[in-house]
Each structure stands twice: as structure tokens, then as C-alpha cells.
Image (cartoon, rainbow over all chains, first blue to last red; front, side, top):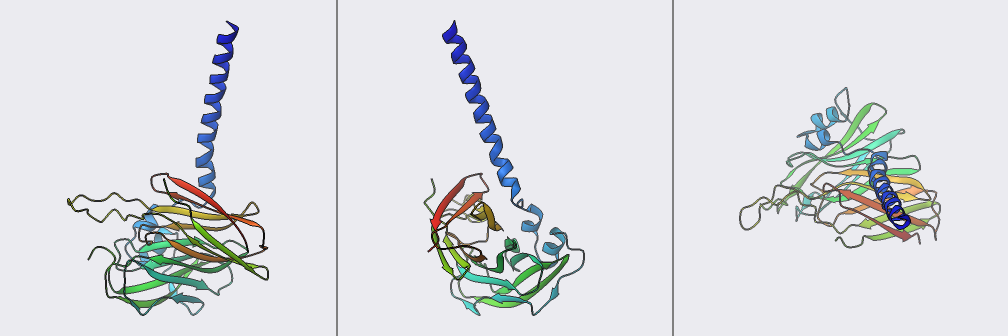
Length: 155
Length: 103
């Protein structure tokens, strides 16, 4: 009888521990900025700004620097970099206009971290690429046309 | 399931430049296989870096980030010998964390 009680109590505790650890992971994940579905389904710059809570249209600015190749030989891997010199930049994004979903990557700019990120993206065809920065409640961007000679979407 | 990330973190002064190469398929969900079936989407949604208990980078990615993604960022306040941990979570809930020492 004692053994039975012991088994029951330990299995109960184990289940509780498991539940706690399972429950813990979503809590950790939500501590980061949640994945913004609406923004990642937007089709163009204006919709992305709207999905991110922008109230006015984004304006072009020299404070934002976009580093992108003029011609991308392989659309599967295009190195894009976004940099913002504007004080108070809280978010940086890379937008490829004619991709099925325009917003490719977004970075939270945390105090102590430079507003300068780069990553590799896929591009389906030659199009305008935007580096979008959120400064306060305004959005500013830099734009550059990148020509793709070999598409990254099986084309 | 997934292979380890390759992380290089180099300190110059008090700034640390981190370069990460993640091993991940990054399927868009738009491609079709040889049988004409749509390959389901599989891509990293969030990736973050933690240094001394503080998040120094957090990013949200869409499916258009390249296969085996690369990311570079710079933060202030790191020293050689300290650790930096990079974690990602993809759209199926699969996740991975790898740690590297700043050089």
C-alpha cells in the first residue's frame, strides 16, 4: 500500500513537472516579439507599414542605408543589409516588393545593439528592395532596385 | 533533427560582431515537388541572441529568407571569452539553441 501511494505521488509530481516545463516554453517565446502574421502576409510596403501599426505612410530618408547588389546572379541567395543612423530606431525590416509576401525579415533594435543587420534572402524576380526603419511612430525607408538573373522560386 | 548552427563572434573594443549560419530548410510553402504536390512551409519565425542573460538581438523572419540562413549583427558590451547563445523557433514549433564563445 505504501509502495502504491509512493508510485502514485511520484507519477503525479512528474506529470506536474512536465506540464510546468511544457507551459514554460510558450511563456519564453512570447517574451520575444511575437511573429506578426499580418505583416508577413502583406503584399507591399504600404501594407507592411499598416500591419506594423504605422499611421502615416513611410517616407524616404537618407538616414537609412540599404546594402544590396545591383545584379543578383542567384535569386536563392541575395545578401541584403539594412542600417539606420536615425536616433531612436526601434525596428528594422527588409522588404522585397514582388515576392509573394513582401516582408522578408524584421529585426528589433535593442538598446546596446547597432541598428545594422544583414541576412540572405530569396528573390523571385527583379524588383525594388526596401530597408524600412521604425523611428518613434514613424517609418522611413531606403530603396534600391535589384536585378535577378536567375529566380529563387523555381522559375 | 537539425544540425548545429555555426556561430562566429568577434570582439573589437567593446563591440562584438556576431555572424551566424543556421542549418535550416526554409521552405516557402509555394514550391512543388516532382509529383506536383506543394511542399509544406517550414521556416524559422523568430531568432534571438542572448548574452549574459540579456537579449541582444531578436528578429522575425518570413519564408523568403534563404535556405541555411545567414545573419550578422553587432552589439555593445561583450568581451572575449564570454558566451553568446542563439536560439530559433520555426513555424512547426521545432527549436534549437547553440552557444559560442566570443573571441
